[in-house]
Length: 282
Image (tube, rainbow, N blue to C red):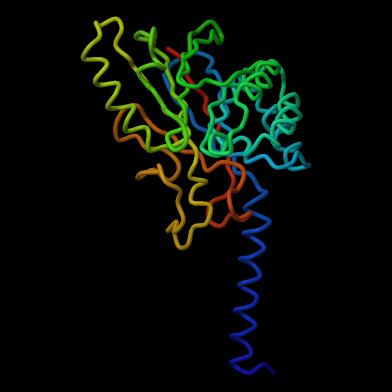
């Protein structure tokens, strides 16, 4: 029969083993799909946008095969990659292998993250890879897509930490689009977008007033390691935004927990995430 001390030691070791297994295996490799209806709730057929953030692609494995198959099965109209897709130029052949696995009909729009910029990734080549796969990088610029006979404007920004985001430059020539979203890797830049939009609108005539619905970000990994609801290790440029929705003011912000890991190859209390948005366009 176990003594009380032996029982406590066994219980502790069992608990530690479960936590370690969860952190290194389960939460790291099991992707949580979170789906939301956004935009005009009364609109007809909605377009579908899938957000993939913070892949930190180091290899293309069975895990990515399953991820791509899951995305293709959703039949999205657009995939938005919100930064830190790769970590160095060594990731370029990997993304060149990964992107063709997605259905070519899906439009793919990406912005850089702090890792791509800090490690000097060749963004021209990265953009070329996206272009070959019905996509492109948006760095301080906007593009308007026609999706199911409706207009959707997407503005992409440079990274807040390692780049030079310029919202005013990005929206030059963009008027009062009814369906307008912004991709910005670091969620803290949402506050700059709000301030810049208010300033620009004071200078614009009514028909050119910016009306941005949503900002989509990543960067935080949802904390990556959460202890009793507290994330002790967060990168800079997070602000008060950790994960999920922030709707206290316009534009609404969604912060993805991302797919990959940074620094340490573990997740705890912050499962990898694929965010799906069914967007009713006006």
